[in-house]
Image (cartoon, rainbow over all chains, first blue to last red):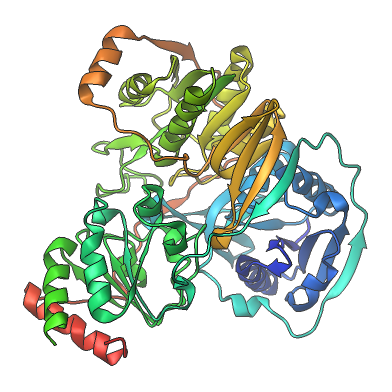
Length: 321
Length: 254
């Protein structure tokens, strides 16, 4: 049985996504324990240069015009060919818009078990175990990773992306693409995000509102605090889905990664899709009525209080200063 | 256009979640179940498509406590056909098993478009959309926030990080994993749901035997220690506000 760990590199428009480095860091730790190799799987058209800082023993590189844009079908056929030829112990994907699309297809087509939302992988007495984050981060699940192969989609937070980067380029093994068959999906165009009035990814103080804000009218209490402090209001997904704030203010998986000095989370529960984008903040402060809210796991300071009681008092005090 | 939406019930995260006696799953005894939020967006997207051009919308869900409410609510919103799948779904239902059940039923419904939430917060073995697409050998696009039909093809807006979207085209039939409907799920008055209960019917279909192969066993489930890293600020509102102001000053944002 192979002990190699494959990492499917995610990249968009000429840039490797952070989750790829997180997965390489995980793969390195597993292979140190099991003695296997870390192989990065890089797919695309004319993207060989993206392999230059990947911390892998080797890079399996497949170049094809059919892989120039991500489609679940093209990636599925390409990765299936690579797995069938090399039978790795684990194949890591991001728990993302790319990885989630393709890992489930492969699980069915190759009959390989799949574990989702994996935060960490550990090795003890020759057994590999997963720890996954479920129920919005409120529950953790653990179990053994089936032999001989398992597919995994990984969430960030368990490994440092810097540990997945390398200053020396790994050896590239170029492999031929398979005969692509019956591709039914194509990319027509990319739509760039609408430029907002502010760039939340560079702001130093974010007053961020979540589902707990309850209505569009209530956003005013966050706006008032932001105005008093000289900060900017951002939001989690439910608020933007409701149309209460524009996408340019969205913090999270499909929105922006932020790294302010202070991230004040008002009524945000802290689902993984949100928290993965705020871990670069210097200080996270959370106000939430639910003492079990996962946001308190990553916050430096927490207040278990109703935002509608506390925030107006806070704003008034600051305005009086 | 024949649209089928797949919905399921999941624990309401507002409630306290407890682990069962065996330590490998949730204690379902007092658990409040609600529709998976993203499945609700999938239903909304189907209704929006039907409002734009003629379509027949079927909603299908496994028979778990509360399923009738979901199906009648969808009927009140404009769904044409409601199907409840009978089977032993309460314990150990994995997405691989559920997708196989759907894959056995769906060909008879002749769907052009299958919509479901891109994920649910309880998913541990992939998500229903792409698993089902693989079983049915249909194309799959996930993380979709916007759907339209053009010259018999589907146009789907797929979300990527950083606000980037890709406009993707696919031939029908297709499975889409919905992240967000074009507009948020509409509210329906209880009176309308009651009306739907009187005027519409829920069909029942027996599930094929459950086959969970491809999914993963849970050996231990636990609640992470909450607030381990956080210093919880105590006191009355005035004290807490003063504390926060001190922290803001220390951090140089005030």
